[in-house]
Image 1 (tube, rainbow, N blue to C red):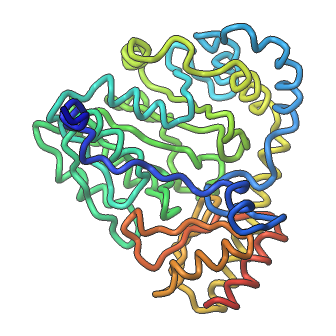
Image 2 (cartoon, rainbow, N blue to C red):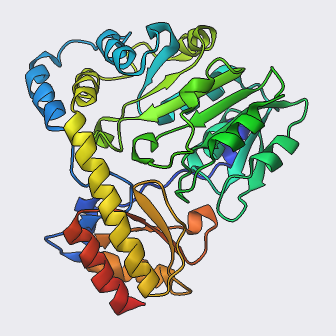
Length: 362
C-alpha cells in the first residue's frame, strides 16, 4: 500500500513553507567567508545583551524541564502591557499561537479568510487543519478589510490580519480596523498578528490589544524581531480568559523551552536594545528607500524592518547574483510576487553593500 493513501487528505495539497537559506549553507555552497543575511527579517543588531547574560546564567539548569506555565515570563508581560496572566499564552514562536488557534477552533470545512499574498503560515496551517481557504487580494499592496468583510459567510470561523503585513510591510490603520470590527458576527475569531509591532512609528497604527474586549479577538506578538530572539522560537498571544483556556487545552505541556523563557523575560527589560534596534531600522530604511528612488525602482512603503522591492524581470537572477556575493535576500515568487525581492534592513555596512551590488546587477 502506498503511504500516500494513509496521509490526511488536508495535507496532500499543502506546499510546505521554505525558509530563507541559512548563512552557513551559503558559505559552503559558494566558498564564501563573509555572508550577510538580509532575507528573514531578523534583528541586524543581534540579541539583547541582557537576554544573552540570562541564558548564560540559566544554562546550567537545562537538565530540568521548563516551567510549563511560563510563570515568570507572563509576570514580565503582565507588568509591561498591563494584562492579566489569564489573558496570556506563550508559544514556540508566534507561529505556534496561529497553529493552536486553528487546532482549537477549526472544524473540517470551516472557512478561514486570509489576504493574498500575506504571511504564508496562515494558509498552510489553515489547510492542514481542514479549513476552506478564502483568499482576498490585496488592494495596492494593502489589506482590503472591506472586501474581506464581504467574504464572510455562515461557515466563516476565523479571519487572519497581519498588521503590519509580511511580505508587503504595509499596515491597516485604526479607522479601518474599527470599521471592520463593527457589526462583525459574534461567532468569528479575528486573529491580529502583530509580529512587527515594535517597529511601527505611524500615529494611526492601532494597538490591537485594545480590542481584546471587542468580540473574539486574538493578538499575537513576537520576540524574534525587535528583541532579536529568532533562534529561540518564542512568541506570545493575548485573548479573553475563555479563549486562552481553550488554547491551553491543545497546547503541549512544555511547548516553550527554558532558555527561551529566561531570555524573553530579560529582553523585555532591555529598553535600550529595542530603542537601538528601532533607530537602526528607521535610519537604514531611509537610506535604502532613498537609493531605490534614485535607481527608479518600485518599492512598497514599509513600516517594518524590511522592504518589498520590484527588481524587474531578472529578479531571480539578481537574487542569485547577490547570494554569490554573500548577500542573502528573499526571492518572492512563492508569494506570487513575480519580479519582487524582499530586503531586510541591515547594518549600515550591509545596506551599502547591497546597494553597491544592486547597482551592478540591475
